[in-house]
Image 1 (cartoon, rainbow, N blue to C red):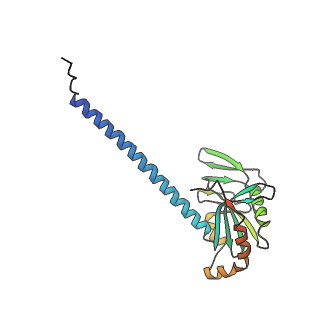
Image 2: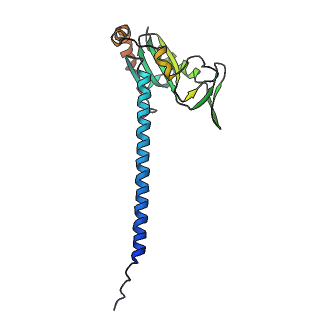
Image 3: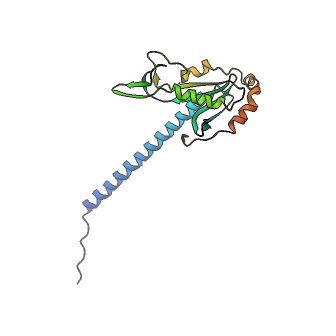
Length: 204
């Protein structure tokens, strides 16, 4: 007669089922936490973009502009304001930032962490020059905007702003009046937008 396989030990079966349930629960918990984190980060990015673009009557973001030498430059935000066109180079770093117009590198210190990045002013000048070449008679400015996570204990370098200074430095005022003020720029603005292309650096 063939051998009859022994019945599994009920205690062992319960342990296996409980282990599977625990592992599944941990996996579901991690998935929920990951999804919630992504959701929060996306909401934060959208809120930040809304604060940046609140000074404009129209805008584009994450686009490429020809640099005049056969290449392209990435632009985080291009805003149409009553003062003309405003290019925003957005920087999101956490900690104390030490930088000046003369320094080739700026330093970020956050507790025990320290890192440097290239002075962004030169790149901003290139972006402004590229847009000016296409914007006709519309005034073009550029600003490097740091989020609220950054602090400048020794003062802000030239063309640098904190995000909370956007509305005070570039007040939009009455929306209808702002729309009328930008009417003289509209033709050039629409032509400029037609020369932008989507950037592969676009954030979801």
